[in-house]
Length: 130
Ligand code: THU
Image (cartoon, rainbow, N blue to C red):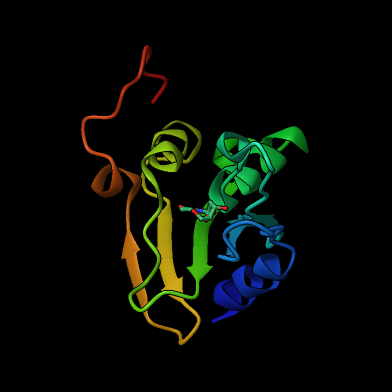
């Protein structure tokens, strides 16, 4: 699957001297472009940034918008498909379109496809743009 290969490529750039746990995220746009994100750690451990947020912040920083997004694939070396942390679920809830296919994966190719509302039902929001 192309999107899983892209997420694996993104994972190569993870900066993880502390946890050694590498995560990759690839967001597929409607025009076929992929935006990559990896987890980036810091000696001040509270400042570590997850792959999911790296990818989404990069996408918006490059001028793309919510409507440009088709799917998001996340991969890590886990037994079951990797499950995003709570902070990333909150950010994904606001920055992804409602019906975006979110593909959770592991390196062996096991996948689970979910929506953002399945990942974070009853999310915190202060306005409803959709
Ligand atoms: N991590 C992610 O990149 N995504 C997640 O959803 C969970 C955790 C990263 C943060 C840290 O660099 C490492 O995995 C171990 O927690």
